[in-house]
Image 1: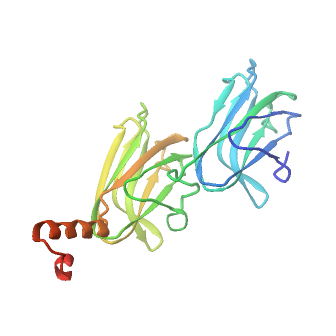
Image 2: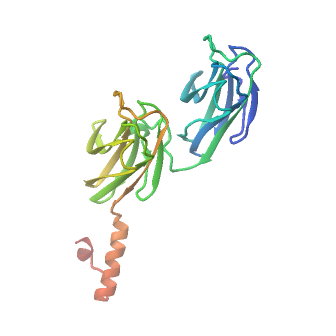
Length: 279
């Protein structure tokens, strides 16, 4: 019942528990050896009652528990519920099962449940919290598809990439269409003295096409992608909405040199001279 003495569990395996009383918060601790995508599943016996647990996925810092996701699960809810996905780096994490202590709707004592930390290793999910451009942006490569989740209305996601030679890059952003008129702002930009400055930005609504592109011509340097769930507005993307994107068009000088060398060999029958290659 504390972060100091949690139950150690293995990922992808069910563990059983029960509520001793309304103040009995249960903690389960698990460790990831590689980055990946995590969620939790929770099972209980359905009852005709609006009393509820709060079940959370989170981490410990200086003796306190901080949540990535939290779900209110009523006794009359479905008997098995799975939370939305969170991309996490390697590390130690917790699932908290709280019988809504301090409220008049706490789960009655003795109610049993089962909980599981779901995990799939992946190097292509964002790693929370990647919401600070310079210090925590996730590095990405052109041509690979990356995945993320907007955990809440304030969850900015930043991704960092390098352009070795002047290129026109294209970002293709994908999501599942919904009927709601809520939206992300998705941008390509750069570091302007510690703040993000946009070069190209698009408003992408949940009820828009499932795939949207934005392009920018970039000089050699380091750039960022910002995925903003329109924080500070009433039209923010609902929590837990997933997205994915692919960045293309970055010129690779090594590939260019190889291409030019083959042209010299096939067309002129010789190796390129230095000035010809540079041109």
